Amino acid sequence: MTIEHTDTAAPVAPVPAVQSPFRRFAADFLESGIARVALFTLLAIVVLALAAPWITPQNPYDLAQVDVMDGRLAPGAEAFAGYTMWLGSDGAGRDLYSAILYGLRISLAVGVASGGIALVIGSLIGLFAAYAGGRIETIIMRLVDLQLSFPAALTAHAIALEATLSFLGVGLPQTEPSLGVLIANGYEYMLSGRYWISVFPGLALLLTIVSINLVGDRLRDVLNPRLST
Image 1: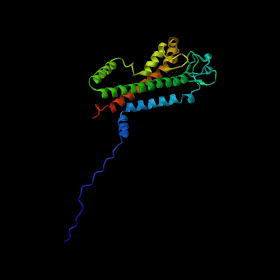
Image 2: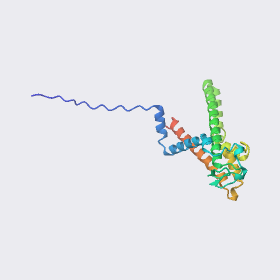
Image 3: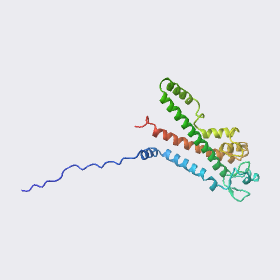
Image 4: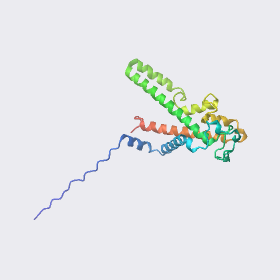
């Protein structure tokens, strides 16, 4: 009688693929649908702002291209130069579509510059506090806590702050159409029914700030080790 031996060893479980830190971070970030929408919106805003010189019919900084006879035209009206002002024009005759995209370039530049400066200063202060230690570190950290107790307009919300200062007339000059300047230029026409001069730049500013805040909140949630499970 012949006994046949069969291999009864348990199958070896496949080894799960190890994700790189970046892929793990991207997967965690994109788990939120709101964060995905905010990120894609922010990327679209950045692309449109960077491509403004090539996708707009007018350079609002060039006074030779701005005709005061085109002032306060309604959305969809035709400019004297022959192109359509899809979002209308402001009181100076600037095409609002062009002015908004160029204004976004200023707002984004202000946000990036202020964030970079805050990053450098904060990193240097943090390194010095860690190196010094003791009482010096305690004093520095208490000063940081004191600064964080003030309104966020001091190193955060730089874009909104720039727009606010421009709206109040203490920011950029009127010849440089930042979003705050555009909103301020249309404020006096709101009661006359020419809503588009302030509303469209305001919507662009609101969309930019909201998308940046949502992306920042998601980055905080993903990168904060205290919130990880």
